[in-house]
Amino acid sequence: RRLRRGARMTARALSAAVAVGVAVSVGVLVQGMSVTFPANEPWWTGPLPGAVAAAALLLPFVGALAARGRAVPTTLGLVAGALGALLGAALAGLLTALTAWPTPAVEQALYGALFLATAAPLPLLVADRALTPTGAAVPVAPAPSRPVLPWIASSAAAGAPPSNIGGEGAGSTAAALPDASSVAAGDEAEAAYEVVDEMSEELA
Image (cartoon, rainbow, N blue to C red; front, side):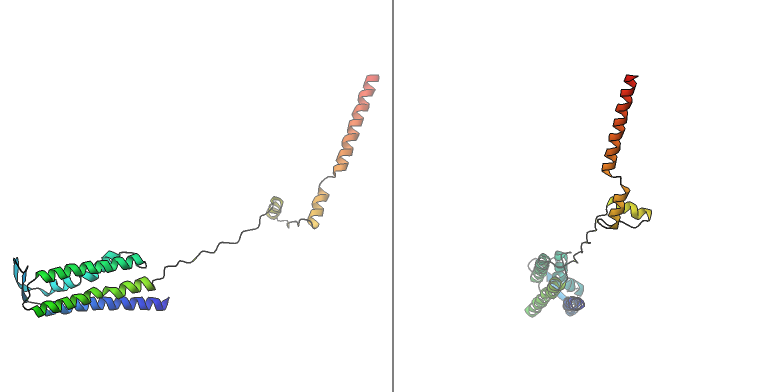
């Protein structure tokens, strides 16, 4: 993970350095150059500010980042960033073509710089797509707890040790409960006494 992060940050720094380096270099070289815009029906003629040329060459880099948005580690983000870079390059190329430069060599050099500026965001986009971790940690399900029987829970709440089913606890539980045969014999004796009492009352 650390190596991937270092490679991703290196690719980002390289892309930004190339884009900014090309833009600043062109801005310094064309500073004060006499141009006409547009070439056929001029609206403006005079010295060209270098900041304008630098901003035009930064359009591919800015367009790539804006088109990608937050879809950093996805293929959709890679494709959208590349299309954004091409769109920014097309706009910068259109401005370059509409401008009348002092010599054709200046225009050709600007197209070469524009090619570098268009390719600058590609390492950033590819590194973010290939080196950004996308898998999330899978949560481990807790082990199912054993069911607690009601009499075990009541014994634990009272402080008594839980009884084992089938062990000594079972014998003590069975001893605590009354025998079914003794209960039945007692009921029969009580019924016999009631019959004898009724017969004696009738005879009397």
